[in-house]
Image (cartoon, rainbow over all chains, first blue to last red; front, top):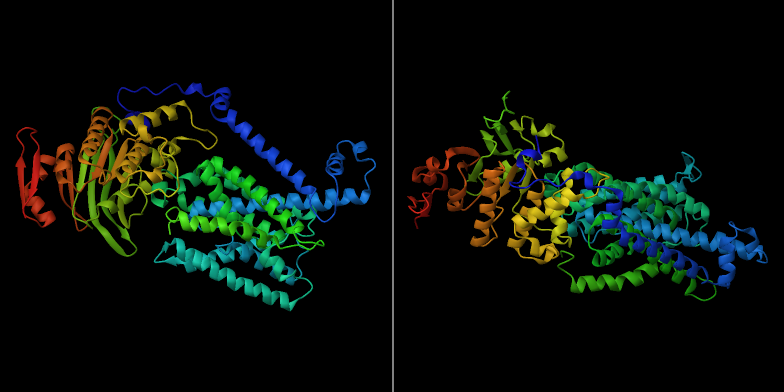
Length: 371
Length: 269
């Protein structure tokens, strides 16, 4: 039973044996390969260039020799051990963390927008980020921060639970007669987010020493982060990212709406649930090391969609890379624009960069935003 | 259940509905409906607003569950069929064709291949050929690189139809699928559907508001009123002024047009 009886008249299906790897590569990957190669090269280049910027002056020659030292120890000869430490363990770690956090937030934003059919959705506007920050600060307040989970720090798990709680609350509030509306959902997200921000303030007042500064949680910062933090996010990012990429095709179909997606054979309830979990996990991992950073998840997917179209198999990796580069740039500005080694919170920089772009969308593309 | 369903002489029952009650929350929109559909039928589903036509299509496609009763699609209860397999048996074109993301039309049509693709397999030559053929049949090739968000309602419906044809299913359900098209396009699409129905044994159930269009192309009509099946039979037998008057609560004249041999309806003011 199936397609054989419905085969169109006078039409023989083409031979299926045609699918060989060579054909596959020729038809889809020849340009794709170049494109990804260029994107990765751009990431490496921007990491290299931003390494040279900051309150501690160094030359690109020193940087590149310090980076290459693990491959060939002689290259690092003549470089002060202290300088090498700053270049590799302070700056490069922070750069990698910025890339990971930025990519995560943008990826999560793209998923929320696709799954909820809501152009205003992102980890911040849905309250997920603040929920994660709340979960993490609660966890630190109770002094469980040394806890481990399968050998990994369990801080992101606490943030994940906070994120899910916030998301559930927003969903419950944003539902009107069983329907989810674009604007009510975002309104609910902002209410929950503001409310939880206040509670983070309370937690901070309860214990001045352990919970980091409010500015860190609410505006985000990558200051003073090490390779340890990179390793903290990475497993969760890889796990969540894998789930998201696994369902990239389904994301395309979900953007048609629930009923059409179901009629095309997508198990809508189940796949949406898994995608929301994965996006929240990725967000929570990012927030647990960086605090709440807004606008990256909102703006980057729109920007990339304008260029590449909404096809998620192509869109998602590009969104990750673009988010990574955007946050790296923002963080470089955050740590270098003030004199005397002072830093801006990186969330301030992303808001300053992202705000005007979003104003443009609001003013000129209201239809696109479904407002 | 028919044991000789696979035999070639006797057409197989592709849809079997028995005493179906179905609706939203506590309310039943359909209040006990039974019918069978044989392979290769072309059925028009008519009835006034709120009579349960759309609900019936949603139930048949497994989107909303039955409150009681039975729906079998190809000898299997619909809720036992996995989503992907369901989409290989039955394609649906709904009235609402809004797409909010700026896909190009060809990408939308390609989504119709989803139920035939395994996870790690990208599109192959057969998928491409089927998509191309579906776009030929619906005359949407010229739209293939246009954005779905930037074309007219009638054009969207043609793309939507192409997507459903790309699913290559033995059953096709249409819910006012041509409502935004002009008369020329409507006839064109229905001629293609008739061709697929007669040559390819595609089973079609079409919800229509236009009774005359139904009379031209459907060989069987089912009339719904207030959640009950009021009339069900060959188009010529069901198209009587008595039956239509009862279903639509309006004065009706039914004429046979000599040139086509088909009955047509005129509502009296």
